[in-house]
Length: 270
DNA sequence: GTCCATGTTCTTTA
DNA sequence: CTAAAGAACATGGA
Image (cartoon, rainbow, N blue to C red; front, top):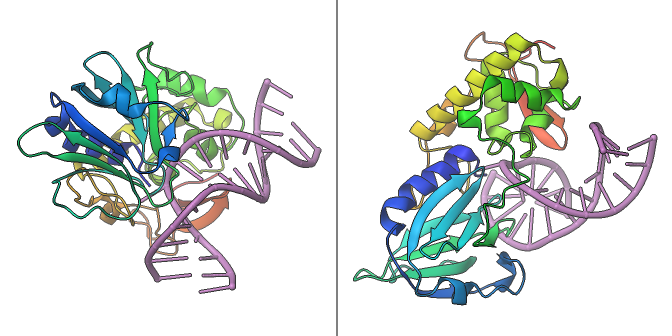
């Protein structure tokens, strides 16, 4: 569910309230969503202040005032919300951070499928060695280099977080449509002009989605519980058989790498 | 009961 | 090593 625009929106709605606040208590209702297994999250967090909340790829990275870091990944159905203590504790709420202060606000992590979780990173250098470059600041030459490394379908390559960090099924389909590139094109066969268009398309698509606070198809909500609005502006995702907004040709849905893939057969030629 | 789902990782197979 | 395909994880909605 949550891809870069959704994660960025959560960070943007969480940061103003969370930064500078101390953690008064931590409830871990399900220890198996916390990694590495057995880490003392309560001991690491209680009494510390939150110095920063940021995004890296699809991760929501918290930095503490002692340099300690942990991140939340929302998986498919995860939510990270700010709640008043009186708010009903909903089913599948796994971790609750109690913030110090007169309002006793809480940051709650809730995830029915539990593909997401909380990862304690520690105080060492940022451990994101497996993540590729950030798409919003990606130079075209870097994208070209990343794509040249593989002959997989460009759609599959862009879903690989080691190639570019933050894109998921929605925004890969949307970006390829905007760039006029067929999703099955082998990544290394995308011509230089196509890489330039793709680089622009990815940035434009993501910025526009962030402006509309992400896409809510089912579960996604920001830290205040509000849904996004970008799903109403999708060009191809979840629009199989509907007319392409550009040319009217029915959008095609195929399965690629086990993921549904949407494209316009007229605007995106092989 | 069936199929599908915005993500990631592992196994199998080539 | 590459990479494709499939399964696995766990839950809920249609």
